[in-house]
Image 1 (tube, rainbow, N blue to C red):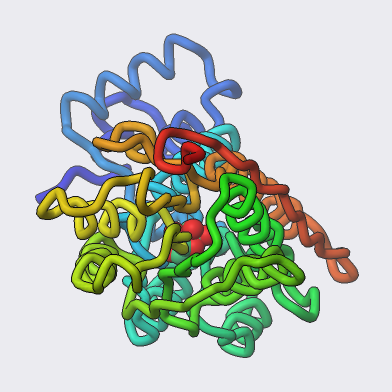
Image 2 (cartoon, helix red, strand yellow):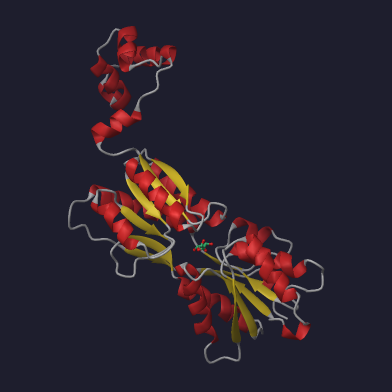
Amino acid sequence: MAASVRDVAARASVSVGTVSNVLNRPEKVAPATVARVMDAIEALGFVRNDAARQLRAGRSRSIGLVVLDVRNPFFTDIARGAEDRAAGDELAVLLGNSDEDVGREGAYLDLFEEQRVHGLLISPLADDLPRLERLRSRGTPVVLVDREAGDRSFSSVAVDDLVGGELAVRHLIETGRRRIAYVGGPDSIRQVTDRLAGARRAAEGTAAAIEVIPTASLTVAEGHRAGAAIRSRPRGERPDAVFAANDLLAIGVLQGLLADRDVRVPDEIALIGYDDIDFAAAGVVPLSSIRQPAQLIGSTAVDLLLREAAAGPGFVREQIVFQPELVVRESTRGR
Ligand code: RIB
């Protein structure tokens, strides 16, 4: 039978209220009494029942974070930034992976609402903002991560993906590339379509042409499939550069292109990704990429969430947009 607060109080010869004070406001209790209660907790193996505390306090000491793909180091970097900032307010971060699946995303929204999280950070899959508005109307503040709400109805932290796509393609054009393939998808993910729009904007009025090679997801496997398809074309029909919607795709494209050493990167085909995850620089051909300040995105999102959670009605929400940064490495070296 698990030890209760009453067992701890009896063992330490104090009241239940004193045990509660030691757990929640130790600075208000005499050090000798704190020590005696902590000894009793240790001896009895007492674990506090946070569910009861949550019911009294109305909110848990955790923040929910729903990301699109937990395998993507970009999102684990976001989680790291969020966790470091949340710890400053003695809050934990509970991570949920929607895996780019609407059903899984909805299940996490239900779970975190039931858990009465202090607030929710989410990189939403589609434009399911009404679902998030209902969550917020029932008392759970929500901040969008890596996306913004077109109507400014949510606080958000993102990077300007239009500028990011433009930076990538302008760089490829400046290194002499003209037949540029954009590898990315699905179109339901706004980051993908915004990066393509930026790519097209950079190519406007130039001799460069953009070909789209759609993918079912933003994964290494889908990138590998696209790279192999490019390699299987006759040499004269291949692009001379690939812009991948994120680094996982780019890593897969590189694997597909180099599979039989028939294609030389960057001499024949240059390659640039997006996110600048740690693995980008570590590949067999160090990858050029468009860097996103992932940890800063995570910590800033928590800042906005805590401000909204503490604010009353009439709180003015903010949409913070960071600028992406071009990082040049071997994979786009000029010819
Ligand atoms: O998962 C979606 C992609 O968009 C990530 O790779 C990252 O680039 C995010 O912005």
